Length: 143
Image 1: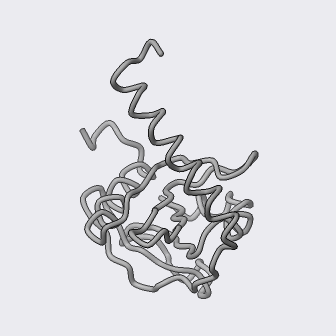
Image 2: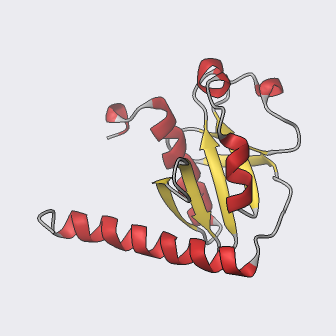
Image 3: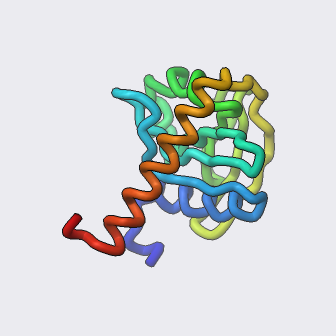
């Protein structure tokens, strides 16, 4: 199964597994707003919203010009990279997760910037609708 995944997808899988171990649910390739697509969005047991961007190489990171636009859509922001990634490239004021296809570890917690209640409600509803649509598409692809 993991052999068919791209490097970033492998990181996302490990991150999602790790989030689940902390009571979070996650959705990959989530669109919080037009023009933005985050690699993993995690929803915590108290409604916390985390965004995790998975970077599989230096070039992948350097080509990402949109990541700062994700900050207004989450309570915490993280980068997820593998053990070979040059982490000194990553901004120190962001969270850091080391991951592989099977698990992950949070090395640095991203600073908390709480979402406004109206935005949180909108994001949780969008998260639920997207997750339900994906599940329905798996169960009944003709819908």
